[in-house]
Image (cartoon, rainbow, N blue to C red; front, top):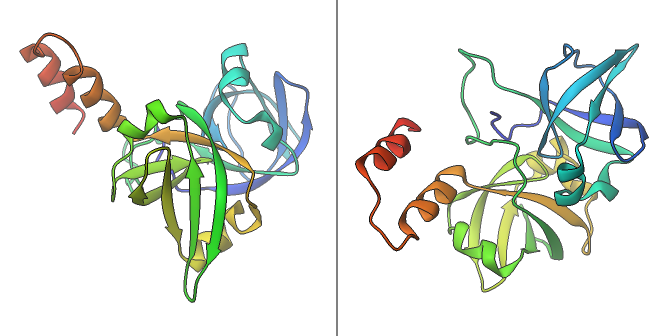
Length: 202
């Protein structure tokens, strides 16, 4: 699991489709899980100044692989005892969104992101969402899109300051929203066992 708080902005050394080599200060171990632009990937190789992760066919299918070049967000998985900030992120990408509009204001910047219509039901106003691995709060939700408001420190410490309209981004909706929708969107009522599983997550 992750928090959606970016550890570092890494530089892409090479991307071949199923292998991604990154230059970073962070030093993982072989087999460690690390989120790259929000997608949970496994470290398969270490080299001087960085490491390599592997992308399965499924991962290649569901993430915006065109963004695995130049620079990317990275976050190592949580360890037992780590302080939980941001929100609970699994590193499982639900959809690819598209930035449709960016509006700069006096002390913040609004990002409007379009997502597949079937995913809107999992996005709530003032709820949490991870975009390219960054934990953010949703301000407004529309029929097929939502609005985020980013403050200057977020733009400075992430790659969002370089994003432009038209860019595709990895989206992970709130884990609890997914579980609850799955439970209560059935023809039958949830069992006590299912309810206890949800309660155990809190």
